[in-house]
Amino acid sequence: MRLLFEKSIPGRKSAYLPPCDVPQAELPEALRRKIPLGLPELSEGDVARHYSALEMRTFGVNDGFYPLGSCTMKYNPAINETVAALPGFADIHPLAGDRHTQGMLEAIHLAERYFCELSGMDAMSFQPSAGAQGELLGMMLIKKYHEDRGDAARRNVFIPDSAHGTNPATVGMCGWKVVNLPSNAEGRIDVEKLRALAGPETAGIMLTNPNTLGIFEKDVVEVTKIVHEAGGLCYYDGANLNPIAGVAKPGEMGFDCVHLNLHKTFSTPHGGGGPGSGPVGCKAFLAQYLPGLRPQKIAGGYEARATRAARSLHLFHGNALVYLRALVYVATLGADGLLEMSSQATLNANYLMKRLRERFEIVNKGRCMHEFVITMEKEAKKGVSAKDMAKAFLDNGMMAPTMYFPLIVKEALMVEPTETEGKETLDEVADTFIRLYDALLADPESARDYPRNTVIGRPDEVEAARNPRLRYLG
Ligand SMILES: *Cc1c(COP(=O)(O)O)cnc(C)c1O
Image 1 (cartoon, protein in one colour):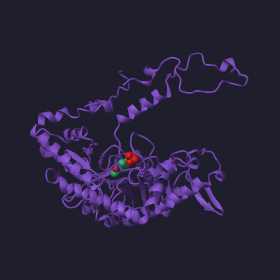
Image 2 (tube, protein in one colour; image 1 turned 180 degrees about the vertical axis):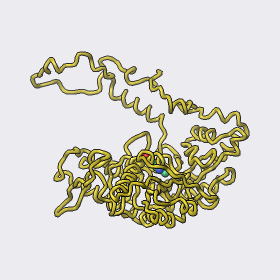
Image 3 (cartoon, helix red, strand yellow; image 1 turned 180 degrees about the horizontal axis):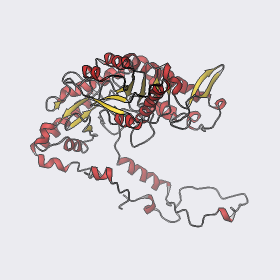
Image 4 (cartoon, helix red, strand yellow; image 1 turned 30 degrees about the horizontal axis):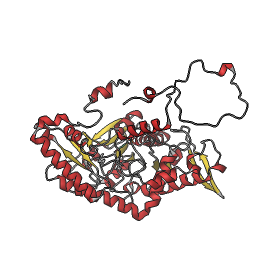
């Protein structure tokens, strides 16, 4: 595909302005550019076709099934976009005063109330732009808490071996030490092991529940109690809230601090490195450490008040239009709708898991929550790896599941259908899984050929990640 610059035709235009009817003013010589700007010259139609062609090369939730486990790629309802595009929200200047931004401040205040209610927290900051940034803020709150109490010897943070890689990375960035918590045979935290390890050096624990195997940590109250009794605090990684939103609250499980992935559970667009939102909620005793501006209700309106924390993670109020979409989503569903959402997410995952058990080895022994994990360990020995399977999906109208995660499962494929898929889609997808499985195992040589119909086939992924050569090859 040619670049806009290569398609450029000198003199072609896409703006048609009436002839100038006022005296032309010349720019001072010093301000004039010495070399031409070099923008492509094209008609509006040429540009529209170019971007439509690019759009057709991508794949998103509006194109087909997108079962990216742990990442919750769900449909983003159009009403979210309509509200976020209202000029009263979309066109606010970040420096506009409170008097001119009352509606936005009210929305942020309402978002704080709703998401605190859902997570069982007392206060929330919407500054973090992603889950990973939320984790960092959350752990910094915990660190500040220990420091202010003169308890600086606490340096160890428990993280289960099934955790997302951002958890240990966050602990590392705080200058703390990760203490790995092994899972037991059921894929849950080994509580006795935790009890034996907790002590005066325990700073806290980072946990997601359900964990990344899609299994609910049923001993979670005991887990948080053990950490608290040792003097540590409990951090909840909220990326897996989809099956429990409206059902259970991290605050009631004993967590002191959470981040929510609004771009996962709460339907806002997600992917491609675009803006996200990972707000951090905490119990009242940590609220003094939250950064940035937080709208407060005052007589006759709202006021954006700076908190006492010295540092900020993000300018102003964070990615406001992202969490505004999440607020619209929650307000549209209401409490009953959220309960239906999480129940349906769990039902869909269990339905698909049951159908796939016909062929695949599934790590979850009993029922799962919103996602489940397949292992292709046996098949890999016959020449068909999880990666081969994943690549074959790309030619069949769907996105691949998450591959090779969680790390404790060999040849993992992690499948999360989400609640917005209907039964017909789930059946069609199950048929595709089984058909491709049979085809690849019947002819393992052919497994290396996929995908055949995408723009890029199989890049050298290690080379692409470690040594990217970001240039255009024509
Ligand atoms: C996605 C995810 C994160 C990180 O969130 P980002 O918004 O991608 O930074 C953390 N933990 C888990 C379990 C996740 O799935």
